[in-house]
Amino acid sequence: MNTAYLALERHFARIASLQDAIGLLGWDKEVMMPSGAAERRSENLAMLEGLRHEILTAPIMADLLDQAEAAPARAASAETDWQRANLTAMRRQHTRATALPQDLVEAHAQATTLCEIAWRDARQNSDFKALLPALTEVLNLTRAIAAATGEACGLSPYDALLDSFDPGTRQADIDPLFTRLRAELPALTAAALETQAALPTTRAPQGPFSLPRQEALGRELMQRMGFDTTRGRLDVSLHPFCGGATHDVRLTTRYREDDFIPAMMGILHETGHALYEMGLPDAWISQPVGQSGGMTLHESQSLIMEMQFCRSAPFTRWLAPRLRAAFGVADNAPGWDAQALHRQLTHVEPGFIRVDADEVTYPAHILARYELEKALVSGDLALKDLPAAFNERIHTLLGLRVPDDRQGCLQDIHWPAGLFGYFPCYALGAMTAAQLRQAACTQEPAILPAIEQGDFAPLLEWLRTHVHGRGSSAPLRQIVLEATGAPLDADAYLTHLRTRYVDRAPNA
Image 1 (tube, rainbow, N blue to C red):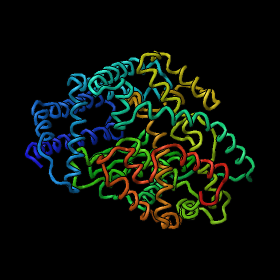
Image 2 (tube, helix red, strand yellow):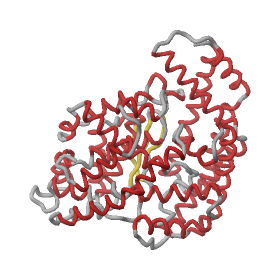
Image 3 (cartoon, one colour):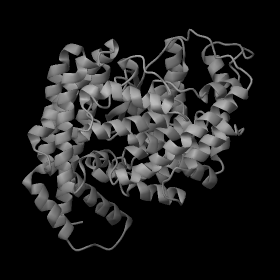
Image 4 (cartoon, one colour):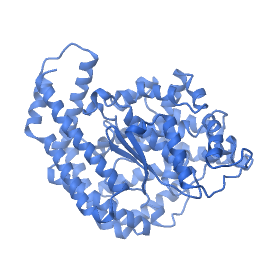
């Protein structure tokens, strides 16, 4: 490749190092940082984000991009294909960055850091009014970013936000899929509840469950799935997440003494994210093309692990005796057999908390947030009216009366963190996960028998080849099409839900 392109690689390697530092400081902010350090940490993060933006938008970057793109094309090869994809990703980042003045980038970084800290207390006290000033600042800055980016990229403000998390995704792609979910899920949910009610009752495992034993179990399962403990760690935070840096992947969960399942499944979910990060192409580790292919793919990797395989009947047949051993329970203890465990992991019940929702009712939580954040960004919904609007959507979609803001609009960190446009990726990720599982099990028949033995190696190898190792070398829809042979749609997801929750197929 030409000298201009090689110079770009050096600049983007510096940007990648800065991003790693930002990621580690962000992890520390959520896990270890004392509350009194919040203001200074917000300044640190704002400075680093500003420096990253300064490098990316320097005049030399535009010149180098123009020169690299104008250079004569070299003969096609695997390396030049990756270089061309990298150049496309570089141009995309540069276009988005130059749309924003540096003071706006730094102000947004500082505002979100302070808002996240304020959110902790507001959530604990179920006090949305206490969060309103900080969240208003974040929303105003997010609108400014959306408007400027949209103008530069020829997108509506909300599409500009979507594109920041999922390159190429637009409302026009999402709306038909979500319309179908909204139309079909009520009847499917009713059928799942009817099937569930007809089954014999089972007793749930009774606590308390030692937190050290829960943690040890989680670490064992992470390693079973392929997590490299020399390149990552597990901690505790208020809101489970996966973050950190390249070759230093940090994931968190939260524990309850009365129920081990939420923490265990949270670890399995976040390990899916971590495995994706650990499987990205090492040869391109400091370049845009070596980064993940967007948040729909990222969420698909957490959901294919947690939902598609780790809640499946084959996996629970392997897991049940390990759980009994972990908590010192007799083999014949009621509620601890594989069938009862599978019933626990696939129990359907509308609830208030998104991260605890079952597969069938989960999309309703996303539909509500998608509608609300579009209205917030456009200005059709005033921020002060968010709690009432949130509660109304949950009642309409799930039939529930939200009792307080803690279980309502304050439950998620996303909006305080400025992550408007992220929520749709969860539902799109669930669809992608179902489609990938269907293809993986068809193409590699060894996967499901291995899962029943607690062996994730065949599955991980398939994902490394078809998803992880591709980085950002192709758009989401191309990766899905080439991996599964079909465009991304809702068919596999809805079929999966019917098979597992209505038909109760033995290996679902």
